[in-house]
Image (cartoon, rainbow, N blue to C red; front, side, top):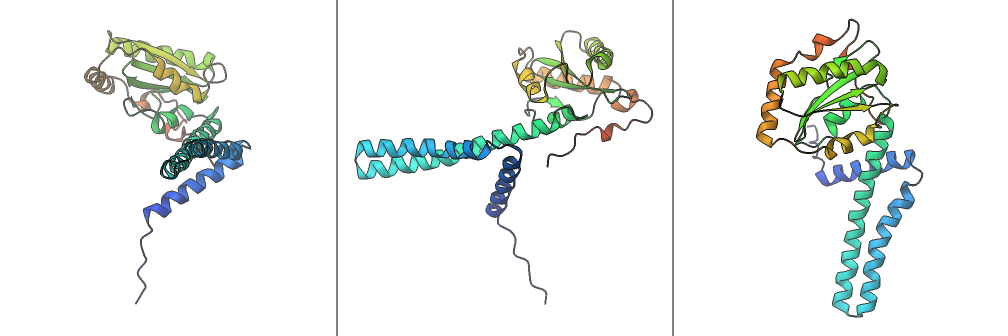
Length: 230
């Protein structure tokens, strides 16, 4: 009889994922190891110092334990930030980078798609996101080429939802870097509530042309995806 395979424990899977992330970050950032060591030593050292000053056995154990746990949490936080920075650096300048961020990194409170709503033969693209600030039109590529498409998308949104703010953002060499895009979106002033946001998203989805309607011949928008980071 064939031996039954034992299911892998979730704990081992999580540790393996962390190890893989650490390996990728270490290869892409020479400062990663010093930063991770410092983020662990600082809280642990603070806990040890407090324990020594208190000179009480029970309190000392508690403070050292607290420092140890805080150090581990700090390492995880720093590792996550470094991994995010690595991904943004690899996506920057790639066609479809905006779509990748809208799919994987935008907050769940936003309604957005990785598929562009406008695209030209040069693979300059326009995306749309709906959030509490209203409608955000995001252009990607060379601004001189894509500005007309972005303006078309803005006018379309204003025509369909006339009383809703429509914001324009541009990501590219002559605009925002990809890692600044979400920051710019989150800084926009809130203008609608969640119920209104849902209604706006539904109305735009039902009354705007589908992504394929504005795609030039020979361009496949499904291939407008930035390569996966390695």
